[in-house]
Image 1 (cartoon, one colour):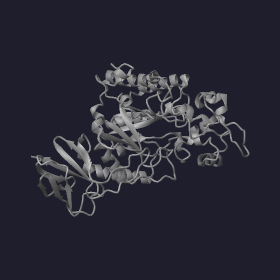
Image 2: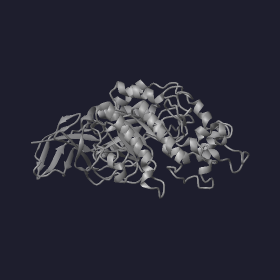
Image 3: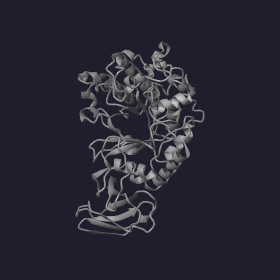
Length: 481
């Protein structure tokens, strides 16, 4: 059993299911999808002159009269079909599934005794997370939940403010109503109202809220037994400036509870906890999560990259990633000992739009050919070769302009898989990372069969067919004598 300490939790070992799965799909979904106006709506609707404030004012009315609590009641999820969606996600290659439990808006997508604003009592009147879990387990998929509550306390302080000018100047927003202080947080006295709205403390020092956060985490763990728990923050709550190491004890207690429950269920820990602090002394209590970016090279321990087809909540204005971009991120991540978690956007009624459906179809077609080069693989001695690389910068994602010499490598059962990152307009390809002692016996292009090759002093030259098996990165299986 784990203790709520760094010494104990740093003995954590990532379970094999997570290392083998490689690709998960995430439902980052909730009442903030209702306006179909993008991420952070519940915060920005209370910041005068922002686009989301203007949308709210002209669609629903002034936030003193129609606030976030009222938007939550509009969320119905009336066409939500978790079984049908899960079957599509599985076909599209996902081997684990993650549901949003609570975003910064403090609305729970699960049945709770701690917060009356939850999806069973308000809005859909459905246990969204419970329905997702049941659908995932029917397909044997590990089920995870994400919590964004830790950053909620200060993130949501604008609901206590008011317009600074215009016809509603000085009229308090509905977050000031004492009848809803339990939902909007008792944060008025703890936040500097004169501060720049773009800057605030992500993880609060408020002791009462920290204790509440831990109670919620334990409720999630005990009721839903997640295989994965994700915090949209560093390990709570040690991010606070000048805080002693002991301030991490809330996060450590939650992680220990997650792992110990998994041990009771399975005989050994099979759970994964992810957070975003890149300090190895912190992230070794679980798995490092990197949002909308990647690592420069192979990590000695498993990690998770996370991204979205568009924004984090449904937005009619969003431009979606091309399937090629998604596949390239996946390949680059698994070559570096990572997995990828992809958010598929849902409309407020629970459905996905036509473009998201097309992306899933394209992923399904690619996995149908290349899945053996993904599932169960491990990093090779180098992640790749060539002159093109992903941009390593926070929240930066760009489609790489791959060249003919760009490859990414993984291995499994003594076989090497080389992903040809630019498969189009070529008849030959050359791999230079093999040693002279590694004698190739055969080369197979997945989806096409064996292909001719020549090897000299380790350098491997491969003849490719005129027609490649797909439009995106292709995988070569290389076996050795």
